Amino acid sequence: MLVVAAVVGGIASEGSATPNNDATALLLTKRDVGTSYTLNRGITHRWTLAERSKEMSSTLRREMAAKWVAGAQTGFDGSAAVSHQAIFSVADVFRTSSVASIRKAWETMYLKLGSGARLAIPRGAPGDARFLMRGRMLSSNGTKLEVLLYQWQRGKTLQSVWLIARPGVPRVSRLIALARLQAA
Image 1: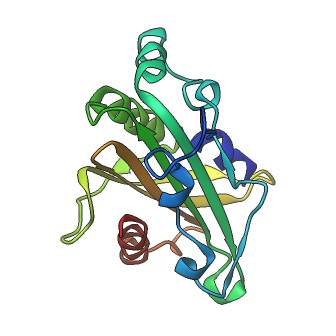
Image 2: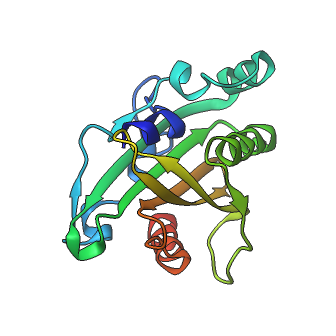
């Protein structure tokens, strides 16, 4: 899953964390994902601005520097009971809700890196400026994996949930259910 960490990016808070800029408060918790999952401490962290804007153009890096406040991600590894499916939860907090260019750049990057395709957004999916994709990637040991990613905007935040497992295991219905929990 180290490959996924590179794709998703890194998160760290700049300055003191408050309820308004604490991205970790927006992430899924162990209680949200259930007993068949264990926290992946190697994936769970706060991003730095440099990590989060690493693959962006210089124009977008300047925009990130002006608008980004904090970001974080957490990951959970599933047991055999859930076909070893992994869950990633990501949240970024901005100073403004005007982040369309950043959001679109991330969507483009995810589609490219995941050899992905956009999917129709299911009814009841949370947020605004919603993005759903199915893609594929290789694990660190070369195993082929399927990726489902749902990203949405809510006010001054961009959030996403990822499901990653053997092809055929991730389900859009489970992904959206997790997104609803994260958005609550």
